[in-house]
Structure formats: structure tokens, C-alpha cells
Amino acid sequence: MRLIIRDNEDSASLYVANYIIERIKHFAPTPANPFVLGLPTGSSPLGVYRALVERHKAEEISFENVITFNMDEYIGIPRDHPQSYHTFMWQNFFSHVNIHPRNVHILDGNAPNLEAECVRYEAQIKAAGGIDLFLAGIGEDGHIAFNEPGSSLASRTRVKTLAYDTVLANSRFFGNDVSQVPTMALTVGVQTVLEAREVVVVVLGARKASALQHCIEEGVSHLWTLSSLQLHPHPMIVCDEDATLELKVKTVKYFKSIERVALTQGFQQTLPTSLRTSTGATLKKPAPPPTIITLSNGDTNTPPESASESETSPTIFAPQPVTSRLLRASSPAVEYPLRISRSASPDFDLVPDRMAERIVGGEAFQGRLTPTPGAVRAGA
Image (cartoon, rainbow, N blue to C red; front, side):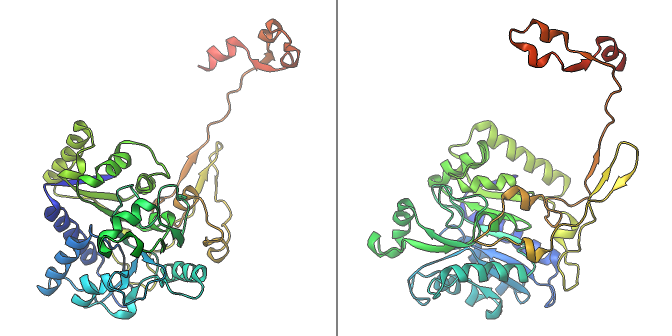
């Protein structure tokens, strides 16, 4: 994981915006092979959106061949409501750049069948070839998208009840009237985010410091869903100084030192070339080479292919565990062939286990065979 620390909110936002632009340019998207970008809402990405708009108006970046998928949407408020995430995205970003409306995807919180809407959204992401870069913000309790504390790390797009702390925090957008804040939403799942080829998270302000500390210095926990980024092969968090208040001094110094070394070597976060650059083909990524297992006798063996993608694709009705998805051959976590060497078992002479005779009631162990001491020393 990379942690990029900037002096203030503006510097952090500008860094993320420049990073996204660099990724799109390296990818060189085309109509047949567009760049797929996951986007958040809320206060955290506003500075990023402003910087992206400015760079677009300066003709430094085009979003013509970019497809977007938003993280979430409230349930039960009209699409044109001032606080709907449809309205938010068009007011703050989409209407200011040259993105095609047909390439914009936002969950429909007023769909007649919300579960079917979630399944449809996952299918749209899959049809687009997966998400190349998922930009995200976090809540004060460490939730990513609307994956509140306690959310399954294998979760996918689904209906979610919002925690009271989230409702209270979002009331600032509803005139500080908690009763006006929707209490349910549609959200992409933790697993949906982890399946993106790259995840970049913006963390700003002292109110997010505790969440950042749990993600960076502690283990993976469903109570802090941001910590799931530890399972991703290419995550990056960009924060301001205020967000590091709960981190240990040595932790902050460590990540700053990494960045200094990287800058002196002339590189930032580096992705595998196949993830960084478009292939120019209709299919985004070529199929990875098969897994090769090297046996003790020198022979090689290729395991049979797994079930087809259509048979194994998870849905909100049948999610799959995080590890099984991250370690599948189609995942960016396995870029190179896996070679497993199995050493031959030592050829020891086996004798009855004499120590079993000294154990009270150890009759069941007396028939056990162990290597002779001399054979063990010779084998060593």
C-alpha cells in the first residue's frame, strides 16, 4: 500500500487529479477500449473534480473515451433532488467535461426492484471490462462507499441501511435536518471495489484520522471497511497532514521516506504495463497464462480450467469470498504464472515411537512410526 501525505487538502486533491490524468493518458483509451473510472460523492472528492475540470478546460485531458461508475445513491429521493448523487455528479463534474451521457452509470435508487438494479449494475461493470481505477472517499467510521461498519468484505452491490453516524454526518447537506436524510442507499460492495485494477482513496481532515490509523496501522477488519485495501494489489491513499494525527510518528516518517526515494528514482506508484496501458483490442486484458505446477520428478502439470465465468460470477445472491476472487487467475493479483515446487519426502527409516510408551494412557500412540534418530541426522 502507498500512503501519500500532502500539506493540505488542496495539495492532496491536486495530486489525485494529476494521478488520474496520468493514468488515463498512459492507458490511451479508444472507443473500442475505454478507460473505466469508478467515482465517489461527498465532500472528499470535490477538490479532485475541480482540478479535473480545470485541466479539461485547459485541453490537457479528454473524457470522451472514459466510462464512469458511481459508488452509491440514496434510495427514495428523486433523481433531480438537490442532494441526489445524480445531481451532485452532474453539477460538480459531468456537465463540465466532455463525457458522453451514455457512458455515465449511477445506481437508480427509485428502481421498482432494487435487488434487480444491483444485479444489473454489477453486470454493467462486467460488460465494461471491469473498473480500471476506483476513486473513493471515506466516512469518519472508515466506511468506503456505503459499506458501513460490519459489512462483509465479500459484499457486492446491494441495498444498505445507513448507520446513524453516517446519517448525522450527511445531514449537513440537508440543512442539518437529520429527518430529511435518507436512511437507506444502494452501494457497490467491498468486493466490487477490490476487483478494480487500482484503488485510490482520498482522506482529508482530522475527523478522518482515526479511520486512517485503523487502515494503515491495524489489521483487516469489517468494522473499518477501508482496511480491506490491505487485500488489494495496487491501493493508494492520499491524505493531508491533518488526517495523519492518529498515526505514529514513525509511520508517517516511513511513508514520507518511501516517497522521497521514489521521487529520486524518477517514479511514483508503478503498475504492471498490462494494467497501465491499453491493449487497443476490444477485450481489455488478455487471458493470463495457465497455472503451472512443477512436480518433484521434474514434470509439469496444468490444472483443469475452472468453470466458465458465467457460471462462477458472483451476484448479491451468491457472493464469493474476497480471497477467492483476488487470487483467481483473472485477477490483477496474479500477474505472472504461479510455480509451485514440491520437494520429495525424505527417505527415512521408520521405527515405532518409543516415547509413546511413557505416556499414561498412550496405547493409541504406540503403533505410530517415526524416523530413526540416525536417519534424521544423516538426512540433515
